Length: 324
Image 1 (cartoon, rainbow, N blue to C red):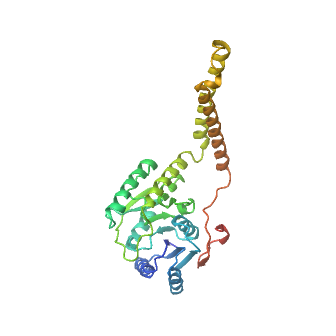
Image 2: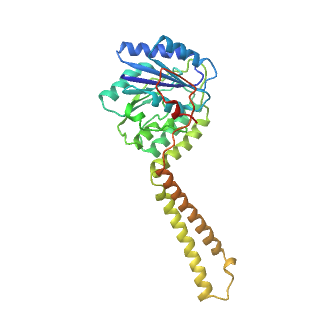
Image 3: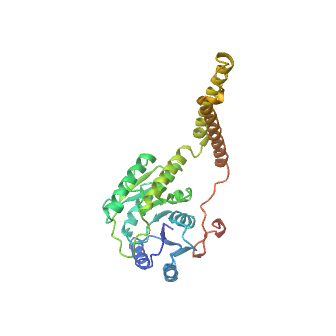
């Protein structure tokens, strides 16, 4: 199979058939073997019924259903576990991404040997204040922090070599930073392609302004994990030892001063240096222990993202992997 197209969705019943037919038409016209995997992230409308009907009409259509909303990252993770194609495409279900872009994305991965191609919505049809400006600020911060030079981290239209999606774990709300996760996993041939952005045709966006706040918090998390995730003792241990030495230095100074220089002076506990020494030594010990525990956790078995699958159509995903 040449292509796996992964589509996470939440309450997108109006657009699913149109999107499916559009993708199928593009695949047939380009003579590509494919599968379409819809991941229903706890929709409360008729999305799953439509996916079921589409799968009955088209054997290339598959579905995974969550009993409740677990988030886009968990939906992508489930889709990545199920894919069989040599190249994996992710696309949003709201028809704002253009399926006509898929063949060229496939070619860039297959023929140009890229590990990952990220879409860049250079011209957007979103609100300037609610999406465009915050998105530009967010992408600038992501570039500076991660070192991955992309203009649009949050574009849902991306193409991957199959090896990439099988070797990264998309958890929490890290779907925005899949290129960074791929780079950290050693897949450094990351490119970008300008893609067409279309105005939303049905319904309304499922993401509010809080996504940018969460995005910045996730950015700090992934920066820390990528820099110190495999060696937390290098950060916490170093700062812990430094703080402990500072505290110990103050304690030695107070002891020497009281015993040999000014034995008749104030009590040690009446001097502010005593509390500086005490606090510094306690904080130093705590930081060192945090680094030690972090090292132990990094050596333990990794925890996979947690979600539950209630139904599947035509996929070969192992249900036991996802039980919470």
